[in-house]
Amino acid sequence: MICIICKKNLPKNEFSDEHVFPESIGGSFVLKEAVCKKCNHLLGTKIDAPLAKNFFIELKRYQHKISGKKGSVPNPFGEGTIAGTNRKVIWKPGDIPVSLPSIQIKRRKNGSIELNVSVDARKGEEGVSKIAIKKLERMSVENPEEELKSSSTIEYKEELQPTVHYNYKINLLEPVLAFVKIAYEMAYYWLGKRYLEDETGEKLRRFLLDMIHGKLSIQGLSKHDIEMSTLFQWPYSNIRGWENSHCVRIFKNGNTIACDIKIYEEYPPTKETLDQTKPESFQPTISYKKIKGNIINSIIRDIRDSPKPISDKKLKEIKEMVERVLETKEMVSTMRIAKMISPPFRKRIIVSQNPELYPGWEDKYLILDYIKKRHKEI
Image 1: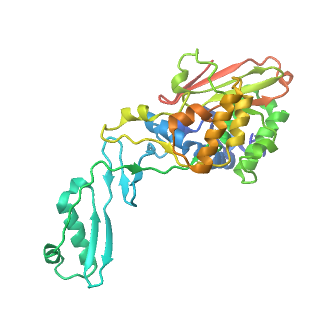
Image 2: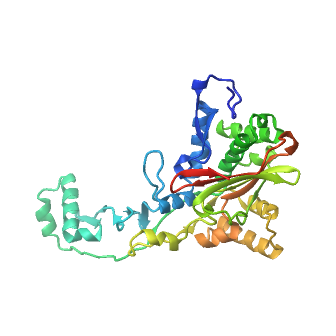
Image 3: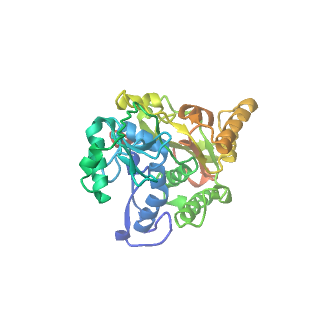
């Protein structure tokens, strides 16, 4: 048996089921006896995992309660810090944020000790005292309770509804790897074993192989001459059920065979959609502090190649906005980013330049319901 990634001839027991769309994002479609165990593992760690951990994808998984292999649902707002401090805040879905205890010690010139204790407001003054006493005990202070009571200055200050900051590293390029993998594997599934001899398919395979073995960076798309563009709108919105599904379609596109892929909905979830799943007392806003990677050129290229034309004025506006984010770290809202640069979760990839190699093949469409974890072919 031949592995479609490394092309090694291996016994049947060296193969394992390959989820085309990662299982951790609700993918249920599996290729059997096509990918060897070693390549399957590398695809999972080098390609599937970065997609599942992408900030936008984690928001969708959180919104729809889609668990990973370990059974846990990611929480993008799990840990933050109170503005202007290093105090950590922990938040669990269905609850309100909890500020972790923080103690700062300062020794004065007269030998006295100054303690600044910060605790969650729900613990009250008693909570502050308990933590202070425990800290004094560790400092070998005799009779810490009496010492605390006799202190000449004990001041309690309550801070209501402090601003909580969240820092995220958002890579808009990493998801591209998953699109190449999905396109290649679905082309093999629909076009058959002959696809392993296709020149364009070989480019996709070599790119994936080089990526999982660390021989190439994401910028290697151009090196391998892979044709990819962003779909600003999903062309098949008339097909029932596409809203809550990952979708992939293969079809004849001029003198080529193209593969359209959509992961989740049109745009990533916004603050408004997330607010429906948590208490009113906690409504985090999402903003960009920095976008990792040099993405301006790839964004502009995707826009120019998109089936939906865009005006030069709009193109200039997009480029200026992205440059501000990268150079001045301007805070930009999630929805504005989504609308302006289009998230990289709808792509068109050319999978073959030789449709004549596949006589009798037909357009194919696959819908994967990521909530119910089932799929169907059309």
